[in-house]
Each structure stands twice: as structure tokens, then as C-alpha cells.
Image 1 (tube, rainbow, N blue to C red):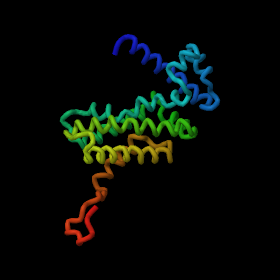
Image 2 (spheres, rainbow, N blue to C red):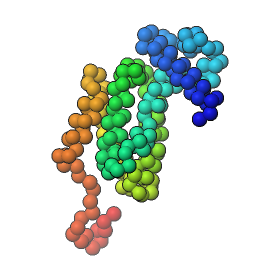
Image 3 (tube, helix red, strand yellow):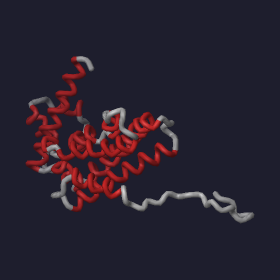
Length: 207
């Protein structure tokens, strides 16, 4: 990354931090883009150049944190695919629980606002392709292989279910929830669809 790109990234992060603080203190709906620009000590046109809409500002922390592929690629090379998946989810939980990121406070605001809530799901889906690519590298398979896509889907479903648990009780710690969910898998009677081993009756082919 060049000097110009580094400076732009730093400015973008500073604007987002100012905006998040304003949203938490004054409320999302009550805070205007003009107020954010004033607090960030930049012009309104500069603010809109970095963030064309207010929902992009509240979602910026999630755009950084929900990078599943990054966490997976950062895991040690000697881990098995399963160990790396578990480690990546726990690394994600650490980021969610980092007080400096204020993810719980931001999430409460998003959950109460229809447009940011819908766009958060888009971020989640957009990150899946990169996650599958990282997992395919780890498994030595094609990104489009069923084993890769189903494995990624299970890991992401764990994240989704833990997140739903957290939304039901904001006092819970993401790390504890993830560890409990992963520990339960070792004894969980998960069933995968299987083709019957017995021959199918004539005229009743296995589809």
C-alpha cells in the first residue's frame, strides 16, 4: 500500500470512529452527515467522498471485522482444516469482543435500524466467497467443490447462530458463546444427507 492509500485508509478510519461515537452518544437517526463532518473537522464533500451514505458509516466497523477469509488465512499452516476453521471463528470472536471496536454498541444501533440491518446481511454474504476461496486453499480443493462450500456453510451457520444468541442477550460474551458452540459440535449428532446403501426399487431412482 502506497503512502497515499495509507493516508486515505487512516482518514477513512478516523471518520468512521468519529461517526460511531456520535451515533452511540446522540443516536443514529438524530445524527446528520453535516454534524459528522463538523465533528471530524472535514468538509461535507470530503465526507461524502469517503462515505456516500450514513448507513455505510455505521457499517464500516463490520466491513473490517467480517473478513472470514482473512482470519482463516492467518491461521498456522500446520493446523488441520477443522482446527483452522475453529481458530478463525475464535479469532473473529476476539475482534467482536475487543472493547476498542465497540461492536456490541454498534450492533444494537444496526438492529434498531432497518436499512443498516439489511446491508449488514449483504456484507456477510459478500465475505462468503473469499472465505470459501481461503478454505479451498487449506483443503487443497476447488472453491466450487461441494466439500468446501458445505464446510464453509457450516462454519458460517455457527457464526450466525452465535450472533442470534448474542442478540437475545447482549450481556453475553461472544468468545464464550463461540467456544460453547464449538465444544458442543464434538458430541453433536449432526446428520448429513446420505444416499441409501440398499438398491433402489426399479422405477424409483435415487435423485
